[in-house]
Length: 515
View 1: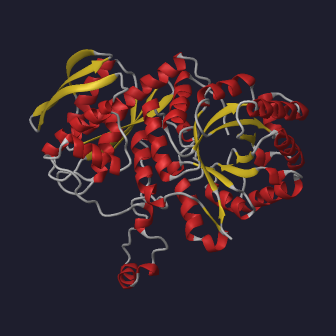
View 2: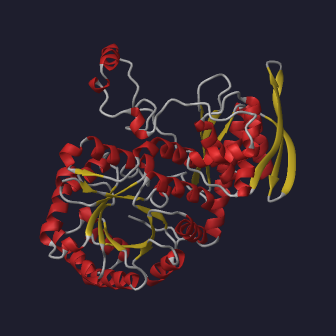
View 3: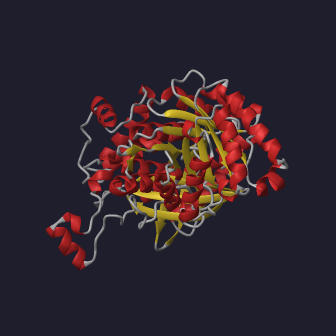
């Protein structure tokens, strides 16, 4: 009999802890809506207590996203639990996820608590959360390095207090599959009331074993896996959602388990998260990498021509990889544009449609054929840009073999237009130096990457940058048929994120170690 494994997506919470992956509220709402289309069971929308921005993201997602349970993380503190409830209340399906460490390493050096104090606090905070919601999850942080006997003692107590999901985190990516599977089996066999809760796992990828550990846990009875799109997350990242889902789906014969994920949405979701975070997916990444279904070996190609199953264990179509089709053109009207976006899963307000349609018409004048990937870029960029402090009004560049590259740039900053002229080593450098002079940023450009979104000489160029300032690292993304315009948009995207993070810090965001 096939068990259904719950998929708990924490892209918007743990995934955002990736250096440079910060998202603003509009971007988080956009990703959450796509996660709903993907069919995840639970969306961890953020950490409501950490900042006004995170609170607003959790509140809006809880109110606007239909389908999945919406969850907020909360430390085992009364103020965190209360704030999580304030963000979630009024929504139809909500969960509070609270946590406290059980490892002696953490209790002694970080929390400065005894085992008895930690157990008492965990029980009290689960009870407090249950006073607000029926669905409470508890995580004993650093579980894989905790004393198993004490870990089971805490788990038994919090289940009795009302926790319906117990999440076992491999917080520092220390475990290996054999011992992690044994840990899950031990919990199920040792904790008397373990059948009264869903056992979940949250694995980090420090040793490259997050997916393997999670699958080992499923083999031993875990009923929920916590994961992120493209495996993004703190340090080496988290369990990759697409790898877990396709691993279970492809080897259902072995695991006797599956998920409710609409796998045809995987590729689109991966592209959206990559675009918004600016984190490029490596070509050889399993499932969603550019080379995941590419075959160059003559022997492999020969086999595929005879029968696809010779060298493909999954069909590209199963994750939404289909040949791009022309969907729109320059004669398409606003109504047809909105309808096509809705077919792709985007439900926009009138203002959002107007912003996106204006960009679409400009692109349609430059390209004869507009593909789905082009529309996805337009929507993700324009909706994100509506909340930006700094926007590009115009620029001109003069460059050639016999003259110094010179750029004149006009920006709008908080509603005020500012123009300046500057020079550089090349046209992109000239634009970047001029933007830096206008914004007075002291940031350092760490990465600059260019690639094409679709085929053809008129394809949009996609630029990703990584920028660092005051110890904060962010990514930016931009796209256009003109690569200099795409470069300017990517740089401004990063600078807007730096401004967003600075504002969050000024509002009192709390930096804490999370599971």
